[in-house]
Length: 173
Image: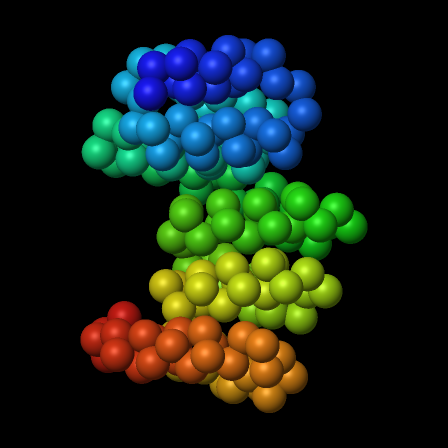
């Protein structure tokens, strides 16, 4: 609805705290707000790599396109996201793992594996899902270990292992 769209765009301009900003970006993405693309574009040079990746992802989904510039912004943020995935701040770790997954770069796999031992269930959950997308044969071993240690995630882990095993052999190597 238009009021929600206007409200979120205003929040996008005025929000100083990073965590609510992530949710504002996601809200605009869910609304598929073409009107917000200009404001989201300004966030592509934000100092927070999570904000940059979330904004690029939102633009891609709203405009149903992926271009080289947006992919480059996302990939160039990977190193910073890897550092944030080891932060003491639970929120930063959570959002960093999600952003690494949306980048889709296999260089994130070792850090997603490391995140399987995170104290926060959400981080472990998203790391598991990310490994289902980006993982390979080596990843399966780590997931089997995690399944034994994390019974709450065992059903999701089993699905992720199956997804990895079902990938064409070429993508597993």
